[in-house]
Image (cartoon, rainbow, N blue to C red):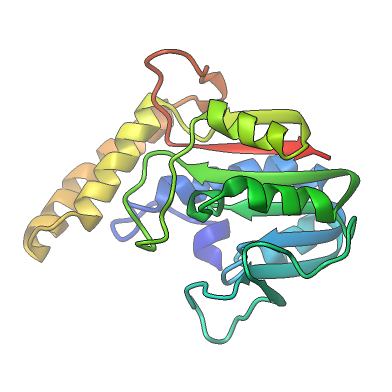
Length: 233
């Protein structure tokens, strides 16, 4: 899972580099808050499992995914599956939970968030990331692109407190990410793609260097790549 944890910018990952780097950066800042029993919601192939177990005070790691989830790797299966309505756990089963790039796939996010709230112990924390600037994916199960304001409302409606939401990137990172997505995923010949990738790689790298996500304020006219947050029960 090195391409999730220790990803390096190259010609082949211009589309995914920034978001992967932003997620691991946000997750690393959250590690001191993770402890005890952890629930990975929408776990997929659990790319952060070993990293979390090695760097946080987590005793057990449980992967949960929807019964109809896309199979990314046949050799890696979730520990539990669920129907998207009721998680197969008792109330207050986990000290912490996280879900990276999951909530945008939930038709009714508050159903999921209220279940996360239910299975967390009092004082438990939930870490999440969501995209804002991203192409349609896992079609037709791509439901939303959240603003920080809608996310905060859904989280409050689900019972969470101490809500902290931050941007994964601002204007420069947004341009870098869009260029990466365009050159790697838009229709064009392989020759043109290779030529443009060589031309755009240093530009993308420079834009990322210029970006200051910690300075992003959620005000009129602001552009963001995505959001991450940590909330408490």
